[in-house]
Image (tube, rainbow, N blue to C red; front, side):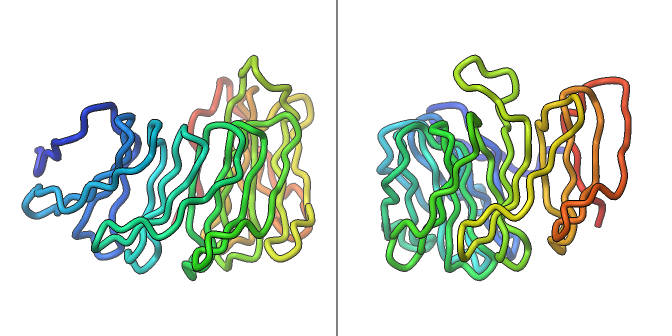
Length: 237
């Protein structure tokens, strides 16, 4: 049964996320805002307004004290989750943003964009520390559990705007060095995720195959074949 309905956005909402303690829900929307609601009452606690384009991603920091948003206006913003104050605007991408994530310690932020890059940001200063290129790709980017590695892949399979390289790549967070390039024989990687401990990577391709990789060595540990396109994949607990 439906326990709570959250109303207030004037545009389509993107996937929502919960605060660490489960008391709040955060949603981004095409109306250019993100909203934080109380789960018990359904009351809108904060509206985070300031982007000039659709907000396509929003996430809490691990302690739920900050919110990171990513927008089609080519920027990301860091917000105080209690006051709604914009702490920093992250400038540097040349095209619409796609994803955004905090590191586990909350000190770094990671964004990906239609310009074919991912950027690593210092949360305290808003400065860009690294720019990671993924040739011809529309990347999605995520941190490993310990924050020492970044995983990117081309999540826009079939896009006519960019030439796809069909790989997933693992980068060193400190140096930006590409540590591993993971590719499927005869297929394009369309999804890649770290395991919870960051020691393994799961990838899927456009031909229906999935592979599990050792994140440190880049060695393929197993291949799972399917008969159709794999839309979602994840590691078990």
